[in-house]
Image 1 (cartoon, rainbow, N blue to C red):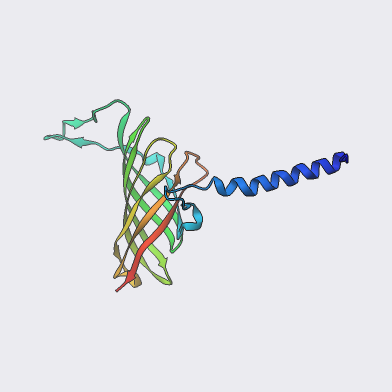
Image 2: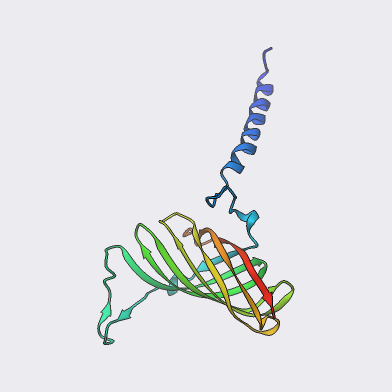
Length: 192
C-alpha cells in the first residue's frame, strides 16, 4: 500500500506527537531518587528580577577602613551584593523586596544568602508582612539553584507564623525581560 503525500505528512505528524508524549516526561528534572522536582511538585513560584543598576562589590575590611580586602584567594572569584524585586505565587502570594550577597566564580560553584521582605503577603488566606531568609547554591554556571528558606518574622495576621522549605530552579538567565524562575516547596507552615 502506497501512501499519498498528504497521508505521509499526517503519519509523520502522528509519530512526532507520540515521540513528544514519550520524550517530554523523560526529560523532567530528577532529584536523584527518581521523582521529578519540576513545577508539579512545587507549592509555588518565586519569580525574581535583580536590579543590576545597584549591583555592588561586597567589600570587607581588615583592621582599618582604608585596608579593603579585594583578593578572595583565587582569580575569577568575586563577592557582590544586589537588591531584587520578586513576585510570589502559590502558598505565598505577593510582591517582595530582597537583598542578597553572593559568592560567584567565573566558572564553578556559586552561593547566595538573601533576606526577603514582604510589606503584605497572603499565606493560606491570612494577610500580613513577612520576613524570610534564603540560602542557595549551584554547582556550576548554568546549573539549577537549590536551597532552603525560613520565615523569620511576621506582622498582622502572620504575626506568629512559623515555616520553612526548599527551592530549586534555573533562576535568572540574564534576560532583562524575563524574571528568574524558582520553584518552592513548603516543608512546615503553622500559625500559633
